[in-house]
Image (cartoon, rainbow, N blue to C red; front, top):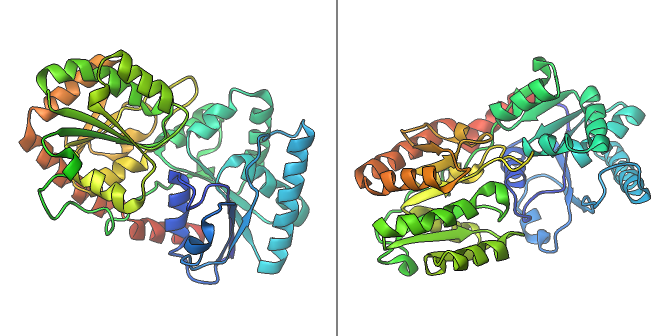
Length: 379
């Protein structure tokens, strides 16, 4: 097997679905076949020691992804120089990039100067956003022209690449993220979390950003409260929309129904998944920003919970519609209200969806099975 250098700004302990994806897949590769250059984090030492491959931390974040500014040019030269040294010292024969920009552009420079082929991951929203900038669009095309392979995280992302970027189909392979079915498991007890006793809980996990749709669920709460006075909406995650969401809840008079948990560790996350009544990711498209896949939907199903996903992006590919969850138009609150009412009014249906979701994860999305496919692909 050709030795791989994984290059990704996002990598644990930095929160992010793509970083978790890379950790789970590459940790299952044979020792000696992988080295990593990943973004800096002040608390990385302990977690790095548990990874089976060598990790180097480097300043891979940049405010400029283009080349027209001096800071952007300096950034790419610094990354190129570090890559050049690692290619030589580690005997690297292929580079895997967490994104097309910025990691893929630095790898393209190595391809031009040292002949090392590279593969890029695409998450959907990244290549959509690149279409909004002339410079980023040009740089993305340059990287795509020279890439050996692009790994799309969903069929939806593949469609974006072939239809909007006109990439040949043979150059794009779909490899979805997965879930740790041994960590994310149904609750062994029917007892609720202590803080949720007497509440009927809808849970959302993810960055607080507009495309995730936490605001639309908050807008649905007044209509839902009339039928379900014990309804409680728990939001796990943090981000730029925290204050706007809190203000919205206050304006609508539902702040007593909304809990902002912030960032929590995996153990706490599992408990939240296990004990919610319904997991919802009411995502929608905002401009060119879309949800590429939605790993949190996998985690919730692995914990035996029914899921609700928006009908935009690739989230629908995580579930079996009407069997493990539902897909809803989340561009306005009314369809969301209707769907949540139907689910919470039929608890046997919810329980059945949860059981089906667990089986769906075990059969199709376990990290072990996905890693086997990845190893076969990259050989």
